[in-house]
Image (cartoon, rainbow, N blue to C red; front, side, top):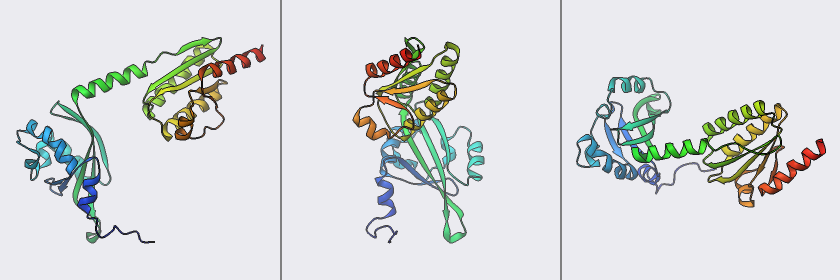
Amino acid sequence: MNSSIPINITSTDALNSIGENIIIADKDYNVTWMNATAVKSMTAIAPLFGLEGAEQIIGMNMDEFHRMPQYQRRIMSGLQEAHRARINIRNKFAADIVISPITSAAHSGQVEGYMVMLMDVTSKAEEEKKRESMIAELSVPILHIWEKTIALPLKGELDHERGEKVISTVLEECVSGGTEYVMISLSGINRFDDSIRQNLQNLYDCLKLIGVECIIVGITPEVAIRIGEFKGIVTFSHSNVGLKYIMSKLDSEI
């Protein structure tokens, strides 16, 4: 099997095709190159540092972008793998940053420079709006829909951090309220991937340990394909069908 890069594709082509902002610096932290995406983003950021355009960033030292350059140098000097952080750019923009050392196989793995990726660059206004939206999503009320039964209509994003918040909130409610059934609705979730399936599976497993059954509703054929298979969890396409299932279970207990 041939694992080499096709001869007609250069490293510059590859880096320019990436939709993230990529900046290359030498081992002395001087900026030497930016990909096309970074040039576009830095055009808006450059004036915040007294520059006329993104091209003037080439040749600048990374120290000039930090309020505490000595702290940044301490992190960079011992960097062996990717370093991730959330940064504030002149109180106007925010971004996730990933800094990775570039090592040379020809020089026994010696660090020859650094690759900086700026991801999810947003204005502070957009950042605040996103934060408020996340707070609103996390404050979705737990609904008491039937005897010993609660429902949680999830909306927006369901990442790992929010998944853990949902688990702790639901567990606390179940223990304090004598809940026996939990119905999770996915009809308001706007993005589905394997992390969502794992979060919901963790919630189901935790509830099972305290004797609470969790069912999931809002599972359309499209969602079923994207989210994959759950282990042991009963799922329904509509909430009314899920509620009938719970009511029949409660009737059989009586």
